[in-house]
Amino acid sequence: MTREETWARYLQIATVDLGLSHEQFWKHSTPRTIKLLLDRKQIVSKHEDQYREFLMGVLASTVANFSMTRGKEAYKPSDFMPSEWNKPKKQQSYEEMSAALQAWGAVTNVRQ
Image (cartoon, rainbow, N blue to C red; front, side, top):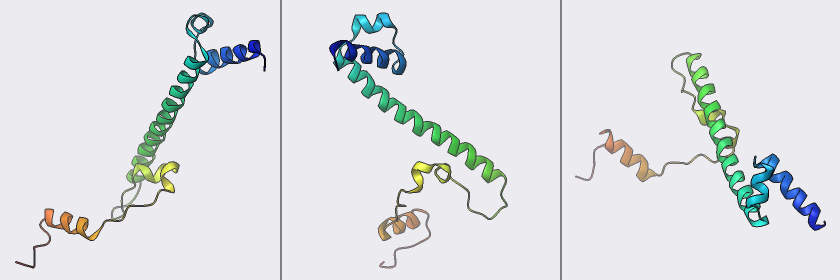
């Protein structure tokens, strides 16, 4: 790739992907700044995607919970988030369960 082709590619990326004007690009851009801006855009895009997925999960779980009969366990937003489906469920340890039950007053210390 020639130098002109490289700069033309950077200009395309800056104007299409980053939303910079031609003037902004030619005044302030170097290959390093374009790379830094692209890295930042990828991070922001990932968080925006996760946020949108969470909002859709909230909406879907609200609709599902409103339309089901009593006695069923309520849906959580994560039930409708594909990125959460393959994550392993955290199991509570015995100590965590015991602490939670004691906090609710359900279990007394039998060693006393």
